[in-house]
Length: 83
Image (cartoon, rainbow, N blue to C red; front, side, top):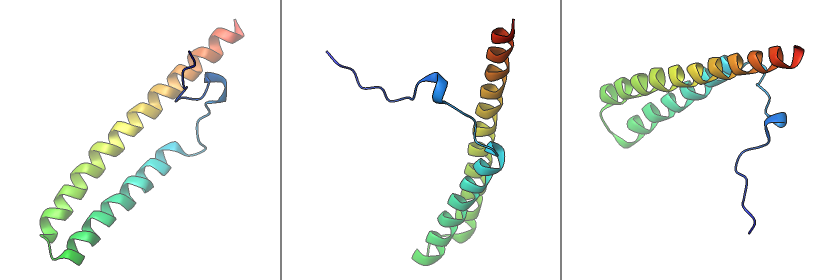
């Protein structure tokens, strides 16, 4: 039976050039979209801003932590190859 692979092989996984900046920009754009939708639909703007900021900081922190762990793992792999 064949199984589908949802993740690329380890050799093909590369870190983006600016992972921290890109993550912050992406989540910042999503936060702005949430606020714009709240304004467009007549929702609570203050509540939307607070919610967007909280989610922005949580999501950005989570992705930065993930990038840091991937960078650490990559350094360890490179050190093992060099031995």
